[in-house]
Length: 296
Picture 1 (cartoon, rainbow, N blue to C red):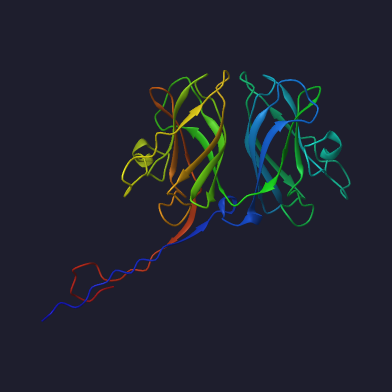
Picture 2 (picture 1 turned 45 degrees about the horizontal axis):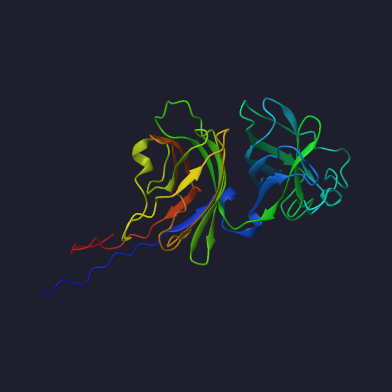
């Protein structure tokens, strides 16, 4: 008797956590640069705004700040960083009190990790912050400005590579977005070796909990390894990332969503992060190949 045709049906659908969903309304991304008219050393950074149940969450990494200070970081009412008059004042129209008493605290390298929850605001509904300005202060001046623009990307918050115990404490905020022919990684890294060029790659694994979960360079099925890519840090160990990669995608061919992102020094792997996080996996099980009995 001829063997019956065997088939394996596998359908996987991914439902992504709120701060990594692939819908434009679910994330804003801001690149921080010089405040208009400021003539000193300007900060650089990357900030992501996501919706929460009670309001919004502002998270990111800002470099080039005055060292060891606490100063203001606020959303303003304007829609442009081209001129000071277009930045606007604190954004709280219709609220009883100004909630923008929020601050960052920088380290000895002038780096601040931002994490703030703000109630009463939204991305695009009541008290919308989409398109508005984000302003960074020193103790005496407005020094940085960025626009909170809609993004269709997913976020990676970088941390230490598993098992690494060296002198560098990598942190950073990276957004991965689709392009016409691949993806682009954009964002800010800090805690790097100063004035260094070293590797910055997507790996095949899905976890930074252990080195085994990180995997190797991700290029399965490609003719050659494309991950010769690097960052270049400044004298304070910060790097701004803008890295286009062809042949990859977020969720279709050569998908990178959920995979690890790895930062190297000249001699070691020092940083790791996961590009988004799956909330649910759904699998339909059929015949195992070659099995001729009653299949589940």
